[in-house]
Length: 128
Image (cartoon, rainbow, N blue to C red; front, top):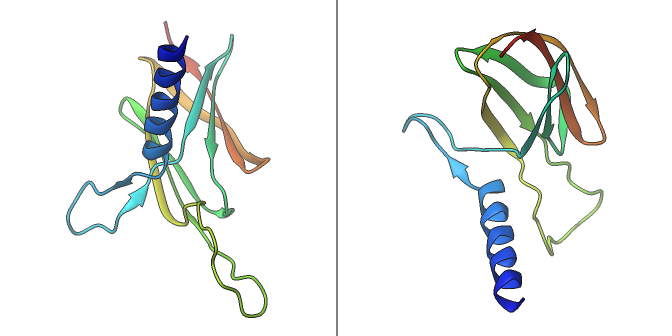
């Protein structure tokens, strides 16, 4: 039982590090962070949920590319009113980008909307 608990804690720590991991695909590009995603295959559509704290709808782009979907956005840090001293800063801000590999098929974006701090993307199309 103890070994299982330790393994679960290690997995949680790996996922936590990945959530805040800085990536840079090209040296000239500024670092970006990868938001976590959930992907659901429903009967008639593929639903993708992307956690995007501090993001406004006008700051997001969603692009279908060969074999996947790319979501790009900028999150904005809002300074609290008055003089504030940061005691803890855990929410990542700035440029985010996530490539989501999709199962083989042909897709089109049916809709995307923000709900509860997440962007929900609906894809329709043909897949096996």
